[in-house]
Image (cartoon, rainbow, N blue to C red; front, side):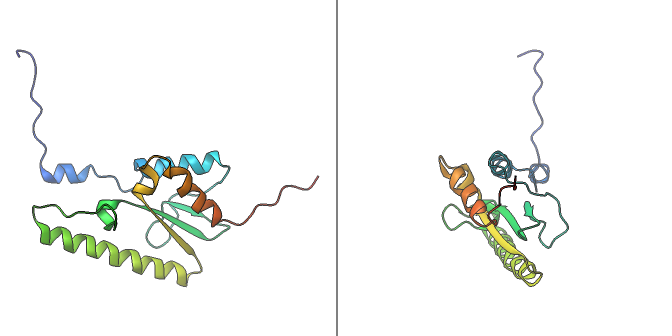
Length: 144
């Protein structure tokens, strides 16, 4: 194996630093689907919790929550190593999610949370996009 260099193993900190906060694959899939359906949204609005998608006229904030990080009731399992840390971490995330939902509601916003698996699983993307579309007001067609 002359000439091949071995890649240095990444530390846990380096691995965790690569975890994306926004622009994740499930988020991008949902965004593309909604755009293709003709729904327009905003990104990076200054609202509590930093919603992934914001529909300003409908006052709807959409979050695409990762199954691992937010404790999905269907898919979440705690890692075997350092279980106490991860249990506290996910519990704090869930508490923050509830607090953000309440803050947004107090500001007059509706919140829709979509699990990562609702976007990734076969055939589920359309259902997730439909849930968002059903939460938006019906657009009237332009008068002639």
